[in-house]
Image 1 (tube, rainbow, N blue to C red):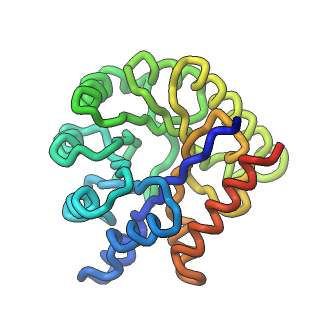
Image 2: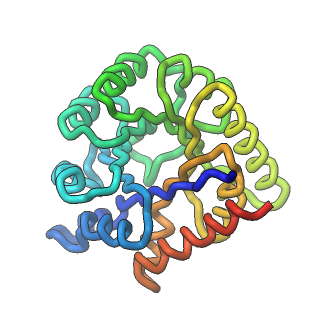
Length: 245
């Protein structure tokens, strides 16, 4: 029986719009409620060092006011680990972070950063927070994630989404192989970054991927047809693809 594919909705860019002008509108916590009403399985929010979109009070409110599991995306720093340990979200996903980037660029170098990551993964594991590492679909990175004790990996789908034609097919095969390898070594496999209505189907068909995290596209679509409608359409496309050969 095909495993149900979970959808995590990233609400970062609701906060980006709010912060462009200041004040309290639009409220990312309201967006989380809308996502829940539309059938999302979880909420993702990235608390960046520079607080360019989600801010600390958003995390507090999401933990206090939203029933869906919260996936806190963050850099592997002492500050962010302390925040996670204070709020105890359902999950924490370590992602690479550079101040000059517009959005997360590529996956985390788990191999190069293993000594830095190990104690931070151990601290979150000990607190009962599900640790995920956002990485490229590379077997060596997956093996290192497993060795460090991370129970979950999220495969970066950006290169697949940006490619066209044969290049996209090749990127898809990388993701398929990586997801199969993740399952074979005991890692729960998620995927995300850049997915839209046109690109989600091929990823949703990969049965060894159990969760997709999607944000920017859904917030953009919400401008034209509402957030709940965008999420329901994404959910429908994911479900149809999951059930197709």
